[in-house]
Image (cartoon, rainbow, N blue to C red):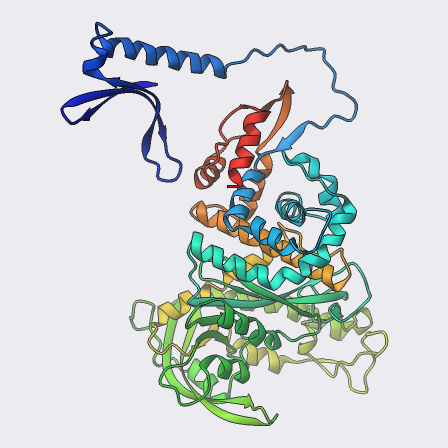
Amino acid sequence: MNLKTSPRGNRKYLSIVHGFRDRDSKIVKTKTIKSLGYLDELEKIYEDPIAHFKEVARKMTEEEKERRKTTIVLDMDEELPAGSNGRKNLGYAAILKIYHELELDRFFNNKARHHGFEYNTNSIMTLLVVSRLLSPGSKKKAFEERGRYFERFDFSLTDVYRSLSHFATTAQDAQRHINERISACYGRDSKTVYYDVTNFYFHTDQEDNLRKIGVSKERRRKPIVQMGLAMDADGVPLHYELFPGNAQDKSTFRSVIGEVRRNYDTGRIVVVADMGIITGDNIFYLVGGEKREKPLNGYVFSFSVRGGTDKFKEYVLDRSGYRTIDGKAVDESTDFMIKSRRIARDISVTMTSGKTEKKTVYEKQVVFWGAQYAAKAKSDREKVVLKANNIVGNPQNYTRATSYGAAKYVKNIAYDKKTGEVVNAAKTLAFDWDKVNEEEKYDGYYSIVTSELGMSDQEIIDTYRGLWEIEETFRITKGALEARPVYVSLEDRVNAHFLTCFIALVIIRLLQKQTGGEFSCEKIVDCLNQISGSNEQENIYLFDYRSPLSDAIGAATGIDFSKKRVRLGDVKNIVAKSKK
């Protein structure tokens, strides 16, 4: 506490104030604790008002310090009661902070308003999201571990499962709501949209309308569901949709990007995706048809060198036009070279009649080669070549599944339709050296095509490299969030499961963004888990973890995680403030 003298006209006014640092602005501010009056009037009462009230302020400070102290009597022989588990997590308050900044509590409460549920759907979603981040697993596990938080979850496990059907109906509206709140609270850079597809497997062999046997990213012969995900330029998820497991990646594109274009107020967008998405139909959809001075929307797509036309391959292998990244001529010692051109390219487009027509798009093609890329391609192929030679020598040891990737180098290979085993064909198996030699020509070469004719080569490459963020997002979803295997089976519950994962993913990405992007999502999750305390005595919790990361999270969210001992009442105040 300090004595403050403030000028008011020709007079001076005294007050006792408390100084503090504002968590948002980082500016030191003062709060008036007691107004005392004008100095000239106080001089009629006190011989030296300033000296008197400085002493008053000092005593108030000492009293406050004493109030904060408590005496703890420790019994070193005290035993834990049977079944004790007094440790609780407080790190989840940071998750609650963002959850409520996104106004998800208001959203889910409003959605449940006219349904007459006997349980609080927002409370259930809060538990599912927090658990998905801090202790991922089944819905049953989340419910059983609900006691590890300073929260009153007043519902049953049956209520959790019942709520999933309701959550499934809110998925699309929830995503639109989240987008609006991110734009309002954090800012959203959606002029560049990254798009990719992944899939998730189930612990079952049973297929249905959504769970289908398809091309699994993990090569599992299990039913899967496809997820198409759009992400903004900062790596924060924008919109997702689920598709049957046998859906092709390219077929998901227009549904997801169409939703973003129609309902996310993005304006013109440039979509970045890999070659699995690049089709004439998808390009034509983005640019908005023919004869436009500027494409309606743009694209930056990777483009297959090995799958290109003969003329394109000739252009790639022709060393004329290549330069170093700083514009110098290339020679035999060059380890990275690049060139580009503008070109009119014909694409095949499916018309509304079902017929295919040739359409022309005007794009820029960027081709580059890197020595490191070439070395990696050669190293990766050597392993596959070794496997292909083993197939030729010992075909009885392989099936369609186990020969995957290497079979392309084996001539005359055939499989049993029922068992998938390699069978003795009429022609002898032989290693295809011609195919290997042809592939070696293009080691280290990559190409990107774009509608953005005015973008520089470096800008195009940098924009495309941002696609790794969405690959990282999928890795986080499958790893840290353990979104697969999926334990629920009914279609509406599957949809609810992925909505929970999406919200958790958005929150951890925003928390990553708020802490300056310096920490991985895994490190943030680990830190939040470690911000836990044990009930020491009489509603006092003892915390034993503090780090630069916990301080950064605290500064970003306005939550003080630095105290070693915290009264239960103060813990509840921290949690309550995180919900405002």
